[in-house]
Image (tube, rainbow, N blue to C red; front, side, top):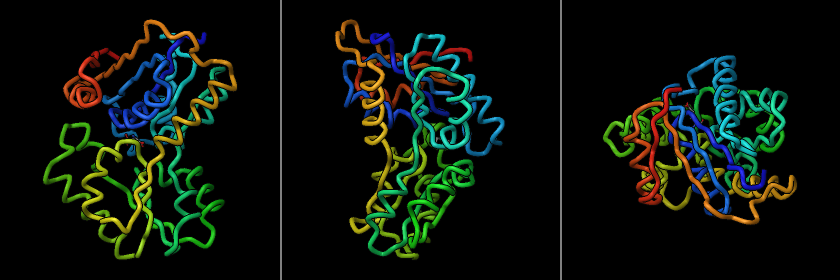
Amino acid sequence: MRKSPIGIFDSGVGGLTIYEEIHKLLPQESIIYLADSKNAPYGEKSKEEIIEISDKNTAFLLSKGCKLIVVACNTASTNAVYYLREKYDVPIIRVQPAIKPAALNSKTKVVGILATKGTLKSELLFETSQRFAQGVQVVEQVGEGLVSLIESGKMHSPEMDALLSKYISPMIEKNIDYLVLGCTHYPFLTPQIKSLVGDEIIILDSGEAIARQTKVILEQEDLINDKPTAIKRVFYTNKNTAVLQNILDEFDENLKAIKIDF
Ligand code: DGL
């Protein structure tokens, strides 16, 4: 079991921002990544649909022998992780928007969160804000269209710049000093967002925290691959491979996107 891969899924390429941190921290682990781009964006779907899709993705990764599953999608994490943990025996790690550190460290007592509709309307987000953001105003903004642009290879485009400016300028006017990226696709946009918010506003995502959490759970469960040989990193997509391959090329030229019917 220790040699088995870690399974990661997302509604597309966004979870690669989590994969990157996990691989950095745990280079001895094999990883299977599933980009369920055919069903993106999840953020526009009902809770029931998100549960059904997340269940299917988890079953797929388990059929490939994964020892632990990382739900590298905020929308699926906030809506489906309770269900998945009930149903499956393997450890299931979820991602969560970094509202807690933002609220704890905010000096202006106003923080912004950019996320999908599915994440912003979830109970988990509501509970997190209630618990950790007392006395802090949380300015919520739906990043409608951002995931679709990234999934169609338009990460750097005039449409993207226009949407980002439309969503972020009102938050700057409300005096936020932290901007939480509550969708795993958004860290790809950090350079563009930084040029809008400048140095005064701190941008937070959850990649490193999730990688640390994955390591802790593997250690607790005695699942760390302590005799690494023939490490595999496999990347599946159920849509066209070009968008996934472009990003993989930036990580490491040996990584290959594989098309599957799924
Ligand atoms: N990466 C997903 C997330 O973190 C995107 C969700 C979507 O497909 O709308 O929420």
